[in-house]
Length: 198
Figure 1 (cartoon, rainbow, N blue to C red):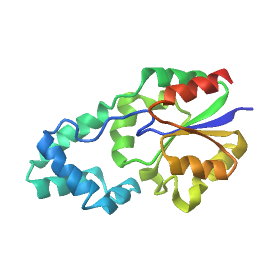
Figure 2 (tube, rainbow, N blue to C red; figure 1 turned 135 degrees about the vertical axis):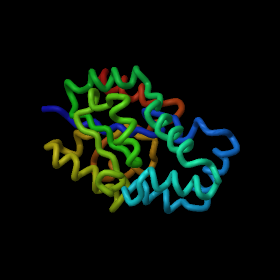
Figure 3 (cartoon, rainbow, N blue to C red; figure 1 turned 30 degrees about the horizontal axis):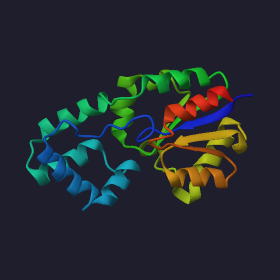
């Protein structure tokens, strides 16, 4: 009977950012516009309430950057996210003993551009992105974890989460699951190695 392994993406498997190809000046404008002045827009984008086109149009209209140029850089950056080959190889080995799920609070562009370009379906049995189903990991005290375990047919106490989010790790442990908090010292690869050895 296989256990369940849930692996986060941003800050766990990957550390790249959207729009990283734009100039430092434009990046500063985007950071201020989205992550300071319009934080709700980010959360709603992650819930599938906005498309990547709408967000890039908003940035272009506000900053004066040409939309077509901004969009081209955005898509290219999404397609060229850097993911640790070692971590993916570890996940592939763990599939013998675990149902593997890439569980991410992310945007529509992740499903549309990142997943197919990086062929992430080759490593994970399931990929669950918040933008596709409108639910984030911490919603309703992390009910998604128990629901996912039940749907796959695995007990929550046989469910492991590898994630850099303290709140996500707290939610799963409160339900009886097991958390592997990713930090600069205890990386994703560190935790996957630990699971391979146990």
